Amino acid sequence: MSLTTTPTTRATAAAGAGRTGADRPGNGAPGARAAKVEGRRGRRRSDVALTAVGVCALVGVLVTVWLGLWVTPPDRFMGNLVRLLYIHPSIAWVMYICYGVAFLSSLAYLWPRTRSLRFDKLAGASSEVGVVFTGLTLVTGSIWGRPTWGTWWTWDPLLTTTALLFVLYLGYLAVRRIPGEPEVCAKRSAIAAIVAFVDVPICYFSVLWWKSLHQPPSIADPVTGKTYIHGSMAWTLLLSFVSFTLVYVWLVARRYRLFVLAEREGDEGLALALAERRAESREAQA
Amino acid sequence: MNGYVEAGYVVGLGTLAAYAASLAVRERAARRRVGAGPAGTPFVAGTSHARVPGPDGAAGPEPVTGAPPDPASGDRR
Image (cartoon, rainbow over all chains, first blue to last red; front, top):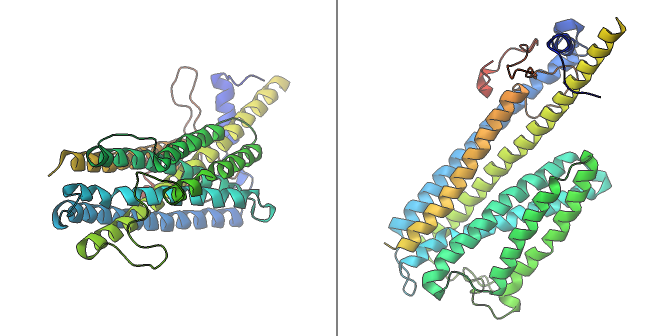
């Protein structure tokens, strides 16, 4: 079946596909119109919420930069290099959130009671953002490591497992692009996300399990809860964690919308192509 | 201050800003292609706003729909 059309058939098909008002099936019905109005209201509400999150994230990051670069004092041992640690741990924290959300969404998709393509889209959006944050974790860590450890890169367990995470989730994004039926693709992607997630706890606990050049958790004692940083340094780091989490929410929501739009674009293209074929067959019969 | 510190902030925040901008631009372009329907609503077959480009690359016929343009969504139909 050819998808090429002549101008005549295209115009006829468009007239068939884009019938106005009452003669279009379902469109003139009060229920469909109410759903459309409700959908538009819902989108405006989500736009307002997303803008609010975006503004809060931007303000939070700008204040973090101001506090981190100009207000907080230099560290006794690291000097000014400590300022890099107001963004590096927060970026790494968001990386873990990204993969955690992708893992839970994939589980929700595979679970028959909660199976919905929404979870597949959420997993895809979160993983893509996660890959960006993993890349940034590696780069900002490397920039900090060069003056502190004397090297840009070392095969330390944490660094190696983080690099592995980056590659695994790039592979996951590649798996998502393999063509096929949406349900088959979603199932395949969900399994890939769950397999890739195995590296996340290994990455997180590697500093405790093996002798590592990277320091173990140094913000607070995981057992006693005693904090090791205080004053403006602690507040700046806390603000950084909150701000980057808001950045994550904003980015994932944007990416999720792109998935929805791409899906709708595919559906509309298919509907239009079908209408064109019907118009062609009507012309052939006449 | 320290060249490494500045480099870290520029790379980290610059990359995030570039990624955020690319998402916003891609969403805007996708919305224009689809026809600015509400993102959260399910697609209803037969209510397509899509325009099919002609063989000469020119835009196809104007979408014939009952829905008015939505200025809040950046729809410039």
